[in-house]
Length: 412
Image (tube, rainbow, N blue to C red; front, side):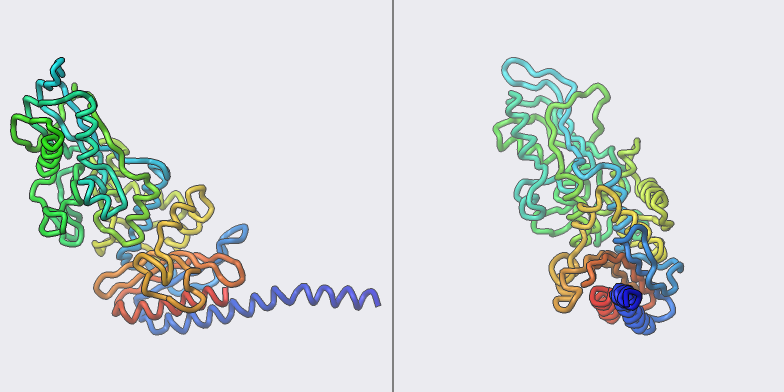
């Protein structure tokens, strides 16, 4: 009798595991059904990541490199988070190499030197667009507090933190309408008006002019007209302001899939490593960080606008799996859109098991649709997934992806 009872207990213990395996079989079938409609140039990979080590549960041409579109931002933002840290900031400074006399006259010029802060601008613009950030009004107030009442020279705008190329490879390094002009000293993300009409032709000179205006509003007169220039080596810092912390910057990048932020952060990676920030060098740094986590992408920009950005789903899931175990996972996952709730997923999966249980980075180009991220299943297990669809109509592809996330959340 004791032996029969022991066998019964052992069989009961196996029931949850058997049920879980059956559910996963259903999930794999549902995922396969959707991928069959995605065409020959689409791939997917799903792994359970909440165990001791990642466990593959679904593969579909998972090692084939695909065009990433904005899934490229996963590589840009993880590298930026790792290099700067969640509390890391980007500074904008006013420097000078002259003397301030007892009457408050600064006998020389001021140099507004950018540090690659994508949020820097006017108080009104940064508050409305980002909920706050570093502003020219803050710098003007600091200079006023320092006792400056008049400047005998001019305000120079210094963008030397970056190279002078205004775009990435998709726009042949000129200004892209999808990004705006890139600069080490960007003001209001390169827009000519706060309402978004037109782009600035000369970002550093434009920013210098806005600091000149802010100084005048404080009663500080500047004798000569502002222009672009380079800060002399002997100059010292007179005032400085910092960007929001990096955890907020990557959230401002990933939630709305902001191309301007992504391309700026990529150049910031290169500048932080030493020397001028360039797209090519930043892409190499981001790719090297991904390789350190087991992923092997080909990266040419930070936003994914260029079709040269490619990786396989298994590479992306390796990145996501490694991030799941890092100390900076929380700020990273918090930067991703939530299904049916916010960001680029606000209008997708508003019902069903995936609603608010999946997060993901979207990606769209003509004939390209991508979605990669994490799902928490009803079982309590967590899954990392990557679905990269090339040669598709994005609208139809999104429907397939949404059904796949519903299946992961329900049957995982």
